[in-house]
Image (tube, rainbow, N blue to C red; front, side):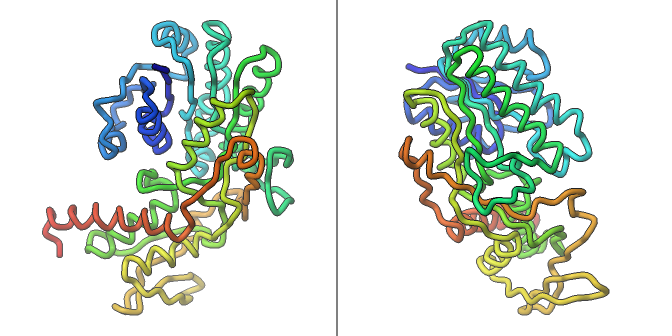
Length: 346
């Protein structure tokens, strides 16, 4: 039985990866900072909370990491832990760097000292490309991050490459473009949209406030992306891969499809130089676009070229954009319908 250690076990990717590996017969250990604000809701929703062993580990403490590796003796490590919110990184650039950048260096140094033969996966990000000048981004596209988050991820990425080349370690980077699911955190715009629309539908919220509707992203389905992570560590040699669908859609497109599924009919209008979305069925403004929610530096569009992982590892995305939006919207409609019943608000 292979043993995998997953950092960021409570997150979207950590939960889906844990489920995937358990189905493959792995013993799965989740590294957890033991933050009191955390919850196991994703693991519980997937029905695996009793199957994943958890152990205290903090990427800010090298000696703690070393002790965990010596105790657990994993065959594979998937480093998914991060301060993963781009907007928050502008408010907390130092903490973001400590976790996303120096934290990766600590983890790799611990691996080198304890067992340099184990396999290591680093969750890199399409945000490293930032304000790219190319239509598609692949493994050879120059990086130009536009946020503290993107910068910190770039440090972690190149540190992983350096340890692979300097110490002959089996260390891979997955440059994953945006990947969503019903388990996405509410801090991300896609889940903020579906959850808020469900709240509005069931009388739990008045309106949804958003920032830049024109930003375009390459959005895929998270359970498919964790399979790509696993495939990288099963390959004959360590390498880096872009994981993406090759399609881009705007935040506005995502919003309009989700609204239609939730049975809203959105009409856009300007009021006092502000863009608002009106539900034509009720004649009520339910969406507001606020400039204060825009980031200090915006990335207008990202689109990945995943030909390398398709050709070498045989990975293929299957879930299309409209289906992805539907999965997320329907899941939140179910969740909020139950919540509304309990509160007796409709």
